[in-house]
Structures are given as C-alpha cells and as structure tokens.
Image 1: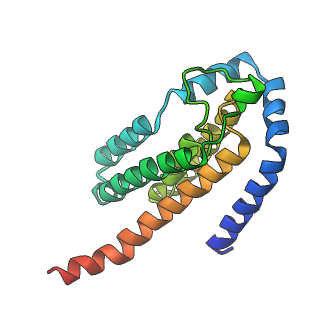
Image 2: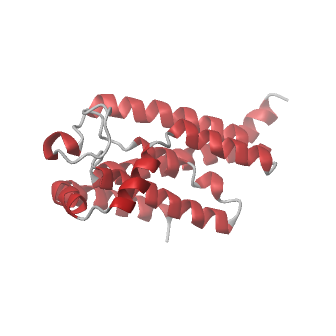
Length: 189
C-alpha cells in the first residue's frame, strides 16, 4: 500500500476520534489499574529531550553517524512544530473537563497535538536501519501514545494527530537528507 493511503487512514481516524474523544477518555478512566498507572506515570516522565538524547547515544554507540544530522533536524522540527501547534490550537486537556489526570503540573490548554506522540513517531523513519529495531520502536511508539490517553492528559485525536505529524516530520527529514542534501553538496563542491 502506498504511504499516502496510511496518512489518509490516519486523517479519517482523527475525524472519527474527535467524535468519540470524551467516551474514549472515560473508558480509560474506568479501566485503570495500579500497574498501568505506574507504567504510564513513568512514561510521562520521559520527555522528548530525554528520548532524543537516548537515541543520540544509541546512534553514537552503534556508529550510525550518518543518522546524527537527520536526528538533529528531526528534533528541531519536533520542538518547533509541536510548540507552535499547541499555542495555536490551545485545546484543553481531558482532565480539565473530566477531572481524570494521574499527573499534575501540565499546562491545561496544551493538549493538541501530543508532544510525546510527535517525538516518538518522528523517530520511526530513523529506526528503519534494522527490521527488528523498527518494529520494536513502532511498538514502543504505540505504547507511549496510548499511555497519554490512559493518563488523561490527551484525547485519542491528540495522539493520532501527533503520530501523523511525527511520521510526516520523519518522512520530510528523510526525503531532504536522501535527495536534496546530496544535490546541495554537489552544487557547492
């Protein structure tokens, strides 16, 4: 299937999730367990900075030096785009209306998109150097994203939008590095 089909499916999923966001949040609230609370709170503490730093160390340790520039560009785009969208949209978090958050000290009007989802999904394209790592990373990305809804800090639509934005950032960076960057290097030689 072509990549744009996946993005189309993602857009449809966002639209559908907007309709059911409140009900999905209530479902997660009513099915909380102590072990999932602990796991989700731990995941909440892993910010985009820590995630990118961890991947930077992995790339350095595994001598994936050609992935360092794309990683830095991805990080800058993740920070800039996520921050800008959160300010522009200013969507209240689920815990504002539902009083269901397990964590505190979050800006109540910064729900859309999920920064955790953007960060983890923006790195998916960089993890395609090994099939096992790629699928493991996809699993990690899904778990992190679901934990955001479970905690009551994001709606499902925030997470799906964050995943799509992250994937688009990854694709944009990969396309730029693979096609445009080599042409620029040849031009300046």
